[in-house]
Image 1 (tube, rainbow, N blue to C red):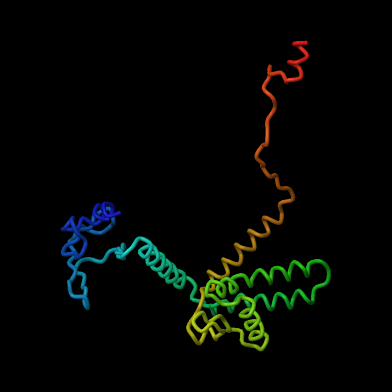
Image 2: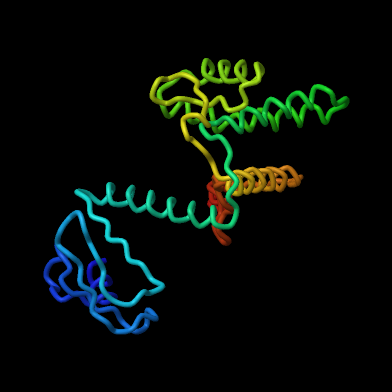
Length: 230
């Protein structure tokens, strides 16, 4: 990883990456071959030089797992900002959207007649998986917290979500917990498409490990050998 970084940026000191005194970028990055100077002062890090279209984020950590977690968080934050530039709509998070959708879909299923009402209710039940996972991963009783959430949404509190710190419910909007509208819409659509595709399969062939095989040709059984000797 370090060799790739050095090949990409060509820092002046190839033995350590504690501080960057001079960094020269390759022309293949569409940035002119110019030296950038970074200040050593922690409160100010001015960059002198021309503006480029490529940004490098250096992550440091005490272990590889910690670096991976920070890298994942940075990647999610960048993608979130990118999505917000295309569609700035937000939804209350902490499982509030899934519970409200499940409640409304279940109420719709109650009004339907025929066998389709069971499929509609199961779809509503499937939407409760996310808040259930949030509760279980936070060490809470999923059944108890889902009961409180359903009661709060029935009372008209559509923004009620799970508070993982107090092990209770709270207003997600007031606590500035939001989800991307485009991300939530895409996740539900893809999950529905996957479930529909599986349900369309009317035959499943399971490959089982063979317990035995045919006898090799030319090999006689013990009974046949005994008859030949007689």
